[in-house]
Image (cartoon, rainbow, N blue to C red):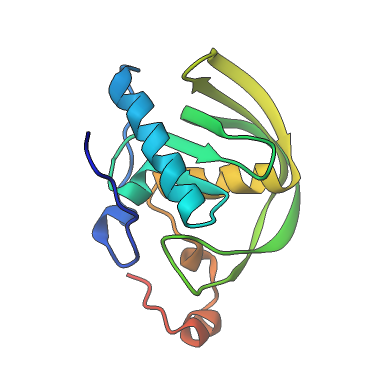
Length: 157
């Protein structure tokens, strides 16, 4: 089985765009299991496949209610906005205040249940938006103002 490892900024893979999963198979299942181990071992609440160097549209999240895995997630709609500080396993020691939708309606494939459409609010909505950003090569530091980037001592490539 392939060994995956958490990619840390400025690893160039974090700026790539993930491709849709075209076939769900044992490899997809193993990827999700490996990602969950990495996420839990690093005390995270979300992880995108890009963060382990795999360029496919897979994200996982667990804010305390159990693991949710999403293949090819797509936000169909969003409501409301709020700001909240976010961290990221791939950009350690950085916190950025980010405006996101308070609630989102998402279409995705669950490996066990097939295609789903679900409504998420609060922290879970925020985590999903954060992880979908990763699939598009977007990091939390991209939301930081220049003075915040200087304070964080991070270069934005």
